[in-house]
Amino acid sequence: MSGPNCSGIVADVTDPAAMEAAHREVVARHGRLDAVVANAGIGAHAPLGVITEEQFDRTFAVNAKGVLFTVRRSRCCRPAARSVVIDSTASVRPAAAGTGPYGGAEAAVRAFVRSRIQDIKGSGIRMNVLSPGAVDTESLRRALAMAQGAGAVPGAVRRTGEGNPTGRIAEPPEMGEAVAFLCSDTSGFIAGVELFANGGTAQV
Image (cartoon, rainbow, N blue to C red; front, side, top):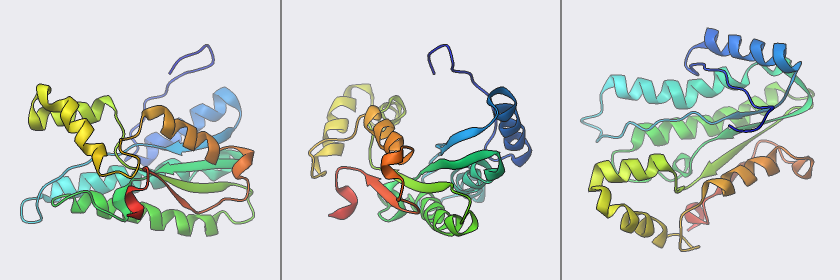
């Protein structure tokens, strides 16, 4: 966050009481919600016979249930507010063996949003899903360093993008621009879609 009008509130998306309190605090500070972006997500990966119940439950709690607790306070939103849920290409194309719980949670999010747009019918609020592929973030680079060693990270990032029709992975600002589009009047008649911002990976 940056800028004189930015402020932060710490809340656990898996805790409904904490999210209720966060929404109340936002309204107390600003009077309303113009846009909500649900962006919390984790990945606990392990083969089917190894994944633990705790890992499975935690993945679904953050990635699926956390979306519900983040977006359900529609009454705090002004009419014509926007809501964007950050999902993943794994909703339709799990990345690799051992990522089943993550892919399952992301698919659940997609189905939830398609149902949710019926719940908010007539409110003027729009909700959509943005599903990135690989994005060159610090968290991705840390994960690659842990898995392959720090020296292997540049090559691993390059190889990650080689199978993409664009020949590269995404940069974080590109995801921000996609969110801004879905929150703008330009997308005023788009609702309930899953926008794949992954350079075509999910389409080939």
